[in-house]
Image 1 (spheres, rainbow over the protein chains, first blue to last red):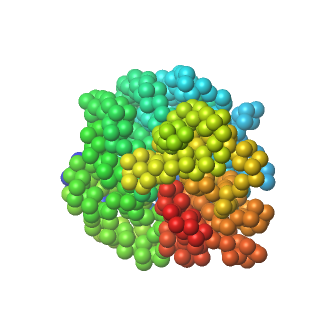
Image 2: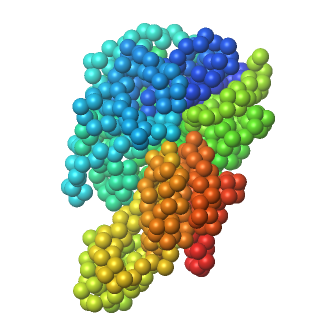
Image 3: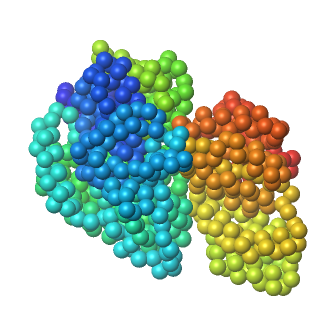
Amino acid sequence: MTSKQRIRAAIEHRQPDRIPVDFGASFITGIHCSVVEALRHHYGLPKRPVKVCEPYQMLGEIEDDLRAALGVDTTPVFPNRTIFGFVNENWREYRTPWGQLVLVSEHFKTIENDRGTYIFPQGDPTVPPSGHMPKTGYFFDSIVRQGEIDEDNLDVADNMEEFGLMTPAEESYWKKEAARLRGSDHAVVTHLNGTGLGDIALVPAPFLKKPKGVRDIAGWYMTVAANPGFVGKLFDRQVEVAIENLHRLHAIAGDVIDVVVVCGTDFGTQESTFCSRATYDALWHPRYKRINDWIHAHTSWKTFKHSCGAVENFMPNFIASGFDIINPVQCSAKGMEAKLLKARYGDRITFWGGGVNTQKTLPFCTPEEVRREVLERCETFAPGGGFVFDAIHNVQALTPTANVVAMIEAVKSFNGVR
Amino acid sequence: MKTILASLAVAVETGKRNDAKNLTQSLVDKGMAPLDIVEQGLVPGMSAIGNKFKKNEVFVPEMLIAARAMKECMILLEPLLAKAGIKPKHTVVIGTVQGDLHDIGKNLVSMMLKGANFGVIDLGANVDPSKFAAAAKEHGASLIALSALLTTTMPAMKTTVDAIRASDMAKLKIMIGGAPISQEYADQIGADGYSADAASAVDLALSLVGETH
């Protein structure tokens, strides 16, 4: 099987020749740039500065040589603008606060003070920064820049600024990417623009220079509870634009894409969920279903939903909404035991993740403990397909290289790959 | 008065901040002591929402709107409490550890503790380890609460506990929480307690300061 066939078989719940693997094909299945550098060194690959392909979480690009060394079956097409609203182009060297020499876009514009590093939206230092990396941090967080709002008279248009139709620049970018990847034997994964409904990472709009509307994180959660009518209208408008963009993307790259990341909204906490299933059904389900139904009716793409946390009881809802894939499968959260998930939902949704705990095992345990957990998860999730191996969310900075290597080598060993 | 207090508790619990503010004002206007309004109106409201949260009947957004309603009532009551020289029985110093900017969980714990009538000194996020003991000393706190969301800032939680233990506030009780945190980790770094969510944090805080809930 080619990598593309392997991924497709897994998602279609057919037994692939071996467990497919993803690292680096999305912003939620990536590896921190410091770990990417360490892995390149470990596998004896040419020493060169890692490109920071996603500047918010400081994820490193996994180039073809590292992808081959890790046994990765996917390849990404990232949106043409980063979460800070700039294009990744004209790479330049940048020394990170932890001393690593990396490559960043020429539009990666920052200032530093005794609190840390601040980054500007769209690379424009004339407006307030939209991201902050604390002095001892390893990635950015959004700076909330919400102005005064009248909560009783919210205007949907204020929260719609970022959800526009595909621009000529985006169309041109996609045409180039489609030409580059047409015929690839890897599974092509991309993030859809504008289908993230209430994704809390995007609510503060770190890509906008002067965001309007509800942009505060706690404020957004309160709006969902106190003003669901507003949220529903916003989602409807978003979906209208998104469907039009899906038409356009399909016309350009319909035959190239395998998997689309639809939405990263987290419904789970460690112990519970952010809302009831009834709220999900009222606010999210009809809009998700519309997007997924369009995709399934018009394309061969598989739809990918990300939600951290304890979402075992939401699995039937995600399935009913038409998602093919759930990520990151946080098995350490309450009720998310791997065997239970596989038994209950394994024939109806693909688990993309769940490979190893990144809150405990991968960063803090021994390589042998990592190996044991990875092998156990492979035993559980692999039968019958429906599993793409990935750590539970991005591999974070400070993760010991020996542990990441133990994870990779355990999957290879399970797969019988030398 | 009892009816208004009961309505106030419901307004707080359901996050109806304008109602809660108006009811608080009407109790003040009727001459009710501010501490009685807190203890018989706001605390029962926050306690009720906390109990529903623990049973998964409500979720973080509902807790946030309840906390916001209570906060608006406290804006009216705090000057009156200060004027009457009334201080909370227990004070807690709370913050997110150095390198970590996440504060929703910390803010929620902070509001729930206020809702249980703790004095809360909130140091914010990305807090230098040395500041917790200093603030606890300055405000006569009996408890320190630390939050961390990231695996990369868990080491800063240990550094902070070590800094408190090495200070002249070494015997203060320390409670910790946050997504990657566990009781095992609390034991490992010498914290006195861990709680998994904001509602349970109130129970833990009360037990650590020797009160029953």
